Every structure is written in structure tokens, then in C-alpha cells.
Image (cartoon, rainbow, N blue to C red; front, side, top):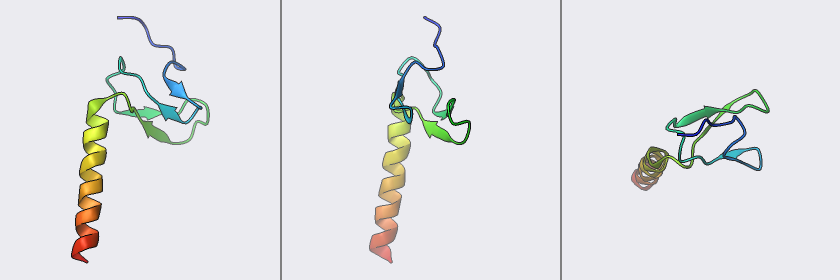
Length: 62
């Protein structure tokens, strides 16, 4: 497995997509503030789908 540079996988400095990195939550290296999700990890997409389904369900109920 190749070593990952901190900048590998960053798209436009805001989005992170790296399938080799198993982390779901990534700290933003350039701004130093905040975190982002690794869009190359399948669990990120599953988590986002669950959140969207929950929000849509709550909106329909209310």
C-alpha cells in the first residue's frame, strides 16, 4: 500500500475523495478549521443516505 500524502485526494481544496484512505472523517489541512467526509469511502455515502431519508421522513411527518 502506498503512503498517502496529505494532499492526495483533495478536489478544489474542499472535497476529499480517496478510496485508499479508510477514514470517514478527515480534518482539513489547509484551513485548519473544520472537518470533511471522505467521499471515496462507501460508509460516507451510506451515512449520508440515512441522514437524507431521516430528514425527508421528518419533513413529511411534520
